Figure 1 (cartoon, rainbow, N blue to C red):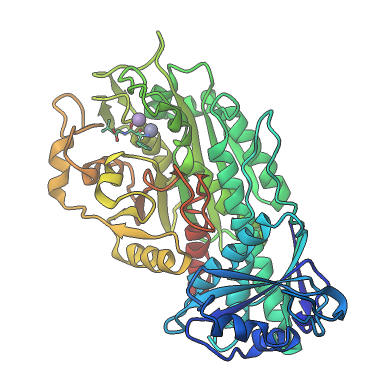
Figure 2 (cartoon, rainbow, N blue to C red; figure 1 turned 180 degrees about the vertical axis):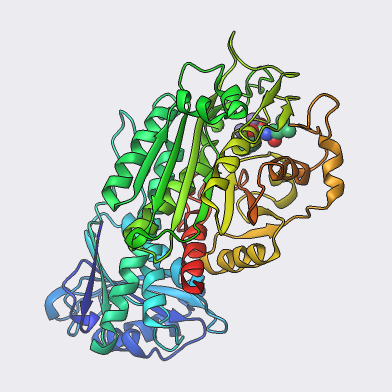
Length: 515
Ligand code: BES
Ligand code: MN
Ligand code: ZN
């Protein structure tokens, strides 16, 4: 779908559908909605007066006008000056505290409703929230574009007809010429971020037989050349040379070789201390010799959701030219059981020389992160954030698709992340990192062991912390966020959610603004 920005009166838009809005409780609509109401000879006011539409959040009403100014017949609203045959009114809910998230949701609800109308190929929308709600035009336009792109996502189908909506264009219409530049800037940003979220969704939805570590690296490389990032991929021999014995142990049982992807965004050759994102990229997690049970195992194709978020975020950061050096690292590995697989009880040595005792080969995410985080230290980073589908227990703690878990040993980074999460809508919740959580992962045989049984999520983070020397670090456990059993809301479909992309882009922008 193509997004455009146009200046003018939306009543004159020559499209299949016009989208306007209404706050809850408003009986005499103003602004663009008022203008359309007059053009429709009061049809919107009558709709409200009849009690059929109240402006409640995420509700819609569809009105049909006679196109091209003809006289109204039975059951039709007088079209007045409208050129479009349809008008969709979306409820905004209460005007009190109406925020950016509601703007995004409103745009998503509209795009979803438009997609269901088979006759609609083109739509035009006003910038929700930029009127009486008083949001900056660029921030509001960003959310409108983002919500539209997120709601228009269609997962790829194999050997099946795509249930394509047919919607091919969306014009964002701004009346005020003075605001047009701001709206255009916002739309560009929202579109870039939205498309990057969709890229991450595509990666997570892809089955593991097609998306091997080698294929992931190939896609990261293609994206990098597309948006102008530097991309380096280490193969297993190179990883061996780096001493990544902990990561390579996980890969031992797979015929698909591991790949270590490094993406760098260095605006104007900047060599400042980078912000680094590290994403767990297990392309499939069978559990290895500590084999998982059959039920639901297919979902372990999502175990590269952290890497997908990092690759998606780097796409947006590159495309938008965020003025900050950012590096994305994605260790991509398949966790399989075979005659060469690593075993429970094995002792492995990583890049830092630290030894780990394997208790469960199913606690593999923290193992590949160990060497990826050790590798990150060479860049002398300002901060490192890892994202990983690390534990099933995070869903028990926080529920599904509400907030991911945040673990950090640096309060400034933690605060930045919480603020970026609230602003982006990719929400987080902080967990403790007391030294006591270290006890359950003490090993008799090695310096640390990779599983503590049922000791809670913080001990998993404590294992990872062992490999994060020399920089502020935060770990995000996103296992409860990346794959949805059913549609979550208008902007988040069933299947891959793309969680984390928006959060990381927002964090990078905050670091850029502060430096
Ligand atoms: N990839 C899984 C975690 C997971 C579970 C992701 C459910 C998405 C949905 C991870 O590698 C894993 O197996 N974790 C174990 C850790 C345990 C062995 C300490 C778990 O959560 O059971
Ligand atoms: Mn596992
Ligand atoms: Zn896993």
